[in-house]
Length: 293
Ligand code: UTP
Image (cartoon, rainbow, N blue to C red; front, side, top):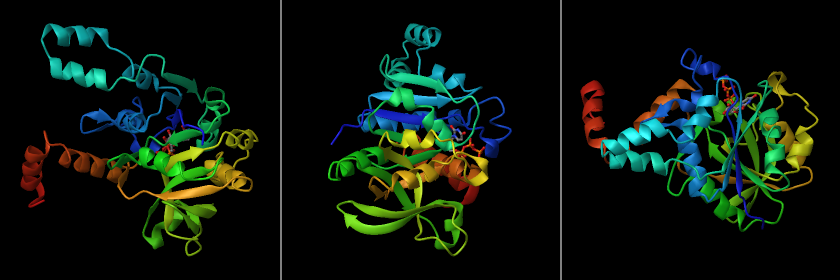
């Protein structure tokens, strides 16, 4: 089984669901407690042992690149003031020198197109894809669980994280059909993007973490558009599924769709409540607001 060394983070979307916050600031820089959403997702990949972090960015996203760089003025001020804890925080959040790459998707033509833009940086090896809108909470993180699961699957397997939704909400998601069990995973028999109400093959939806084989790039190169006139990743995965196995991994931790307001607010509450340095005071503040929590 080939090692997964590289992870792709598509961050070129416009974030229209979060306007006006995202007019001048990328939605990936919105903070969950005190770290940008993108930092949570990169940390999940680092925990899983990823060595190369590939960001597919667009205009107005330069601050993401800056976030993963040193800030000398700030660091020297912190040092002068003896702020060791803050300095440690900054150091811990920094990926190693030369371990990040940034490429541009000049137009937001869809998630499939954003992934295709990473083809030269990924090369001919399987890779992880993490949608930065989805912030996962579990120990170990979702990607680590997936890489552990991948070890027991056949060569050239693709693996996608899935979660359960209310069956009547399946039409909002990319849904998979469920085949035979394979250790921790199950064979995916079908993938449907936003199935018409009542037609979904299950209530398990694709939740933003993937391990994909590089052959996906050849399929994405056709630039075929699907739902909404966008180049859809799900369409390319369906095609790849004709020649390579796809497995689903049922992620049992909590996930938050930070691309929408409710998910983002819930993520802030959940992550604050899980932080020993913040939880007691935050609980008190919540009690004042809405009663016992
Ligand atoms: P979304 O559709 O959730 O992101 O895409 P969006 O387009 O930014 O959000 P809204 O709907 O306008 O509010 C999922 C992920 O894919 C990336 C987004 O940045 C997001 O992380 N994406 C999407 C791209 O990088 N390029 C695209 O063309 C589309």
